Length: 133
Image 1 (spheres, rainbow, N blue to C red):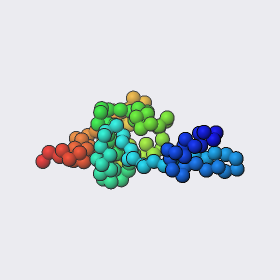
Image 2 (cartoon, helix red, strand yellow; image 1 turned 180 degrees about the vertical axis):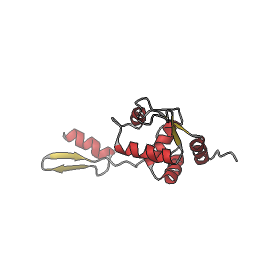
Image 3 (tube, helix red, strand yellow; image 1 turned 30 degrees about the vertical axis):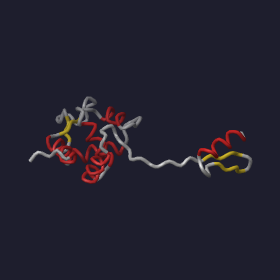
Image 4 (tube, one colour; image 1 turned 90 degrees about the horizontal axis):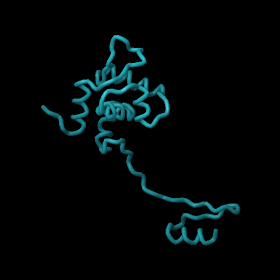
C-alpha cells in the first residue's frame, strides 16, 4: 500500500489522502464535451438551443441516419427502455413537423417508426452550416 501511495504521489500531485486508515485517491481531469456519434459538439449545441432540448437534438441526429422506432431510438441514446421524456420529445418534434410518423393512420401501432421531414433535414443542414438558399 505504501509503494502504491508513493507511486501515485509522484505522478498526481496532492491526489492521495489517508482518512481513518483508508487510502483515498482523487484524480482530476478536464471535462470534455460529449459527442453523440456525429462528431459535431458545437452543431449539437446550436441545434439544442433551437429545439430547446438536448434530447430532441440527439433524436434528430439519430433519425438523420434513417427511420427508427422508439425502442431503437432509446437504445441509440444509450437508454435501456423508452422513457417518458423520449415520448415527450418525439411528440414535440412531431408538432414542430421536424419528424413524421411512417404510419400516420395508426399512431399507436407497434410498428410505428419516425423519420426526418424535409423541414427537419433543412434544420439539420442549417445547423451544420450547409444551408442551401
